[in-house]
Image 1 (cartoon, one colour):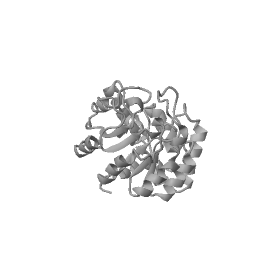
Image 2: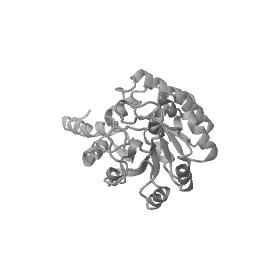
Image 3: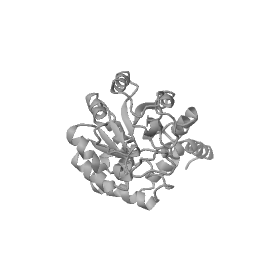
Image 4: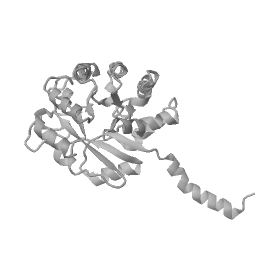
Length: 286
């Protein structure tokens, strides 16, 4: 039998152990800028996020620096309709351009300021993800072995991009660029939804293609039952090693809980989605 003193100690320790056990280690591959940068990052670390891949306007993005408890991976958002970031409508680049120069992009990659290309906004711009204007940038990504993340699927209201075309968000359009650069590390943002079947088909054909489930893991955007069905479809097609977590600036705890509530996933599969798949995808040594 335990003494009352021992029971009190066990209870006291449990107050600390329960929250720690509940904290799921998370790598968020889909984040955008915020007005309060320190506040945004503190909210993420409070939810056990230890690494993020961020893309935003170039000036805002430079305010994001890695710290002891959170690693920052910075991307390149382009092409920018009318030179602006969708929704926030900030200038993407200081000179107001829609496309950055290739020379500048290569310089930033060499300097370690661009570690992936994305979010590629081809759909907001009204062109295919395999449009000829984008191919030189993809070749640069292939040359330096950095990932490419492309927006797919739908978009919310008030994005400020008059040439947006939902049909240009079909992942099937990426097959053309992958045929030219077959080893390109590519990730389909938002799981392609509503074109998730096309995303699955592409991923089964190209083993270097991954997907993130950002936005669709937000119950205010996609009903939980629909989200569950989409994730299960990817799992049933053998793609559990290529699904990555993303928040897309949604409530991080709600996004995490959306995964935790998927009862058909094993603990190992959840770990893969939360961070293990992303660690492998972003590893430049692979």
